[in-house]
Image 1: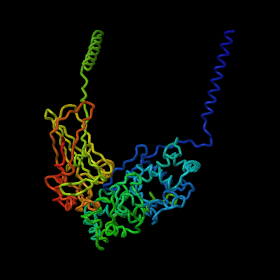
Image 2: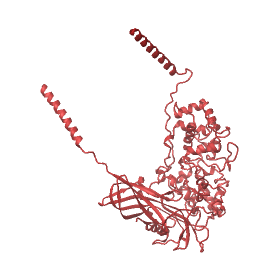
Image 3: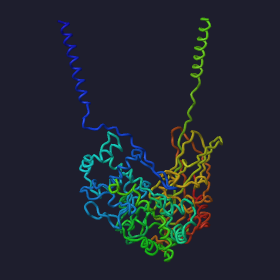
Amino acid sequence: MRSRLKSQLLLFTFATLALLTFLLEEGCRKDPNMEPCNAPAAKPYTLVKPFRFPDMTIPADNALTEEGVDLGHYLFFDSTLSFNHSISCGSCHRPEYGFADSGKVFSLNAKSLPTKRNTPALLNSGYQNKFFYDGRQLTLEDAIDDAIVHEMFVDWDASINYLSASSFYTKKFIAAYGCDSAINKKNIIKSMAQFIRTIISSGSSEIDTKLIIPNNPSMLSAAEYNGYQLFVSARGDCFHCHFTSPLTSDNLFHNSGLEDSDTSFFGFEDLGRGGFTKDSIDNGKFKTPTLRNITMTGPYMHDGRFQTLKEVIDFYSDSVKWSPTLDPKMIHAGNIRLHLTSPEKADLLAFINTMADRDISVNPQYTNPFYKPQ
Amino acid sequence: MQIRTTNIFSIVIVSVGLLLMANACKPDPIPIAKGTLTLHFKPVINGTDLIPQSVIYTNTAQHVRFKIDMLQFYICDLIVKRADDSIISFTGANHVGLIKVMDIISKDVSFTLPEGEYKEIGFTLGLNSALNSTQPGDYSTNHPLGTDNGNYWIMNSSYVFTKLEGVIDTTSAGTGAFTRSFLYHLGTNDFASSANFTKSFTIAKDQTNTINVNMDVLTMFNGAFPIDMRSEVTTNTTDNLPLAQKFKNNFIQSISIP
């Protein structure tokens, strides 16, 4: 009796183990129609920076990879991220216009409504520590999220479903983030940030080749040299905000006298930085834009009020207005206007033109990848 | 033969044992106890902390109402003298401090020191020539010497060591708008200066000793080299060397450690 029970118990144990083994093998067997995923690790991307540019501060959780940048490049120009598939980031940040918009005072968002401010250029954004004219975002990733939500009105679920159904994007996400990668908001934004961090000056503009690299202003033409002397002296007084590094922006916020604010701290049509900080001493202040490629990014100022650089120079020469938050640097020995002569204005413009970097607009590294030859 | 092998084996065992014992008896190196010295820069006007951009002050000696928009400067090369006259110094870019009193206020610089008694503090206002031969591109963007701070003159190949900016009301009644400004920017190697103070202080293990460094802003105008706030209003150093020299001298004079 005891022996029989023992035999039955052994048989039962064996049968159970056999069943479990079978079930486990079946469970692990792959769908014969599915290709095995064996994506190699993404390759680190090496940023090539111009002479005297700093090392970029890149978030530890979003190191640049070849595949991540490539994915971001496509997503940047893909209208999938707007709620009605009408616009992409590249619709308003166009390479041929220095990654600003094409001569528009205000761009049109995905609902065909004008944006609140003129579209800022994205060149060298990876070197910035505050984003938008009012500096309301502190990381590039958050700035991208902000724009996708507020200008493209993204429906994240719909966009993610659309991308997930695409074998093209599935492969690119796997290449960038591995076999276990998820097509989600976080990875979408990270990829776009990676791409935008690669949009940096080529170092081929005349200001680099004639001035910054040789450190020899005499290589400039006569007009450019005269303009340079104005630019870096109190006479033209551009250097305080635009010549503290080769980035040509001090990355700070200033009221440069666009409005008189009716002598009030609150009389500005756009409060700018103050609208974000809620501190009245910041009212009327806006972030200093880079002058690199400025010839391509008009119209100018946060509200696009000036169509040409000549108008901008005329403003600083003859039309600066006083207000309580006007930057002290805008007051020159009691005068808020420079009263430049016409030849001085022309020379200043000649020097600013040396900052044009045509490579940006034609380099396939930046142009719309959906249009490039396959 | 067997006896000889056993003896050799015994000798090896004993030797290893002795070696281990000797090492076991060697005392562990005693870690040097350290604490933190924080220099807290404290700009004051008429005895109260400077509040930039919004508060109106009066320079009664010059009958001028004014507001400070920005006070900003570098310090480097901290040197402290211990009670036994030994000296500890902190050089290099990792020990540069940038003091800011503007929209962002940052007034502290900290250093790690061995515990003990100290009797002197010194530092350079500005940057030494080695640091000033570098450029913002040599650093990460958020380093005190990096591009985020906008403190470099490409045309002079120099950092801007010190900035004082503000606006003034020059009306005789003192009731007008602040339509004039002053701007004193110091840079280039000749405009760095040393500040040394006799100050007894203690650094205790794992503790922070904060020492106030007072800065009397009115002395920057009314010091031994008076600056007329109405007429001497702008220097970017190289474009007005006499005014830059006066401001440099007054700036050093304005600093004290009580």
